Amino acid sequence: MVDSEQVLGCKAPMGLVLVLLLSSLLGPLGQVQAQDCERPMRDTMSLTVEDIQKEHIPSGSFVTFVCENGYRSTGGSGKTTCVAGTWTSSTLSCEKFNCGSLELLNGHVEYSEGTSFGSVATFSCKDGYILSGRNQLICGNTEWLGRTPTCSVVKCDSPPSVDKAEGPSPKRDLYDFASVVRYKCQKDYTINGSASLKCSSNGEFTPNPPTCLMVRCNAPFIPNGSQKSGALPSYVHRSLVEYECNPGFKMEGKGVLICQLNSTWSSTSECKAIIITTTPTTTTTTPTTMTPKTPATTQKDEFNCGSLELLNGHVEYSEGTSFGSLATFSCKDGYILSGSEKLTCGNTEWLGRTPTCSVVKCDSPPSVDKAEGPSPKRDLYDFASVVRYKCQKDYTINGSASLKCSSNGKFTPNPPTCLMVRCKAPYIPNGSQKSGARPPYVHRSLVEYECNPGFKMEGEGVMTCQLNSTWSSTPECKAIIITTTPTTTTTTPTTMTPKTPATTQKDVLPVDPTSSPGDSKTSSQFLWFLVLVPIVLAVAIGLTLKKRGSQSLRAPVPLEEDKIL
Image (cartoon, rainbow, N blue to C red; front, side, top):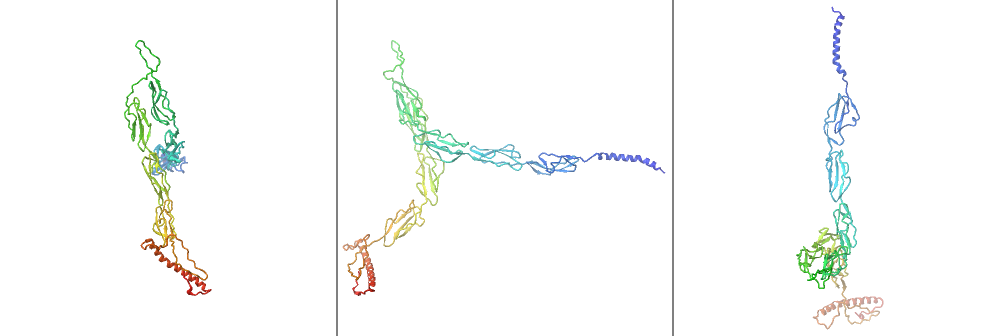
């Protein structure tokens, strides 16, 4: 039998071996502790509000990512777990938010980095427009941060009036960009500056308004010279005169003078004496200055300047086209001359620039109340252009419906007016309408009236409704008055004598017994006599019987004594 101690002694080393083996196996696991994770970070992502405050996250715990401000999720999960100090991968994917492009009417948009989050859009307007609002916007996380601006057309205040000038035309309180206004000086005044001004992009009319000057040059005086050709007093702007020197004198300077805007002549010419050097046969004498007693003769330069052409105009020459000749310009009807009216042929060319003939322009005629037009509608019309007006419904035009641009730059005749024409229903006592229009009576409505039997028309029975809402005539129906010759009967009533109704002769003459039956006038009168006499007698009998009846109540009178008037 084995001793227990021996057994234990034998087993001890074995247990120790087991203990040591177990310790060697469990030792590393015993040293491994749960390791925390630090707060994770991802580009374009951020932690949720619950997780963003955590500095250390225990192993086995998880946090959630969301897309950063300005970014949008394109799918996946933002959840990640801490495993022994290491974060697992998340599948969340984020991309930058795109605000999309912007539009600016009458302007331009430029982007710093496209149209995504954080990009800047810069706005600018076309020439003649002004930006209203911010000139830059930033793309935020949901939209452009701010309202898109607008481009409003530049407006110019009305330019000032000019003394002694008509305009600015057309007349308005405000003008859009690029609008043009014009001035025209009154008679005897000359414009100094541009006649046309334009509304520029800075909201001002350019150039500056012109002025109107009374230009009058004094009569030129050149000693030892005289006027050869050109204008006569009064000398207005651009009046041209040509001077020549008397025999024995030579012109120094230009002999052609033009009246300038400052009321002075363009040049100051002089006529200087011609100095002649003579050579005697025996001695040489060189006088310093000498005026010959016999006028010196000089050979005339026969240089020819050639003919000129003037489109839409005519050129007339005083003495052909050679040196000293004068060319006079005029334009056809409907054209206006721009430039000098006359040019002189100099020793090398025509002295000055050939003028031009510009078509006459008319400003737009005014609108007419209650009318459509003028048509066609323009700011300016060429010579001979025609515009038309048309009155609205129920209105009648008074004047010419068509206006024409005349050679003086005005539309003729004057614009029409539109009238509401309504004539009242005509009333003619003892008359009635025979034919014609019915109410309402508008312009040119025509009615015809006739008189009732026993009445005669005086005046025109046909009436027309006129522009002033009155009828063209006012006829009358007057009673036909007939003169009768009563029979000679004597009545002697007891208390009173009945009176015969008084008649006055007016329209119908009494019957002439001596007239022939074939006379139409006499026959007519006789016929009337036959018709009316019995009527008058019947009336007289009736009156007498009535009177007798009233008297019989008081004092009866024998019937055989009654007399009939």
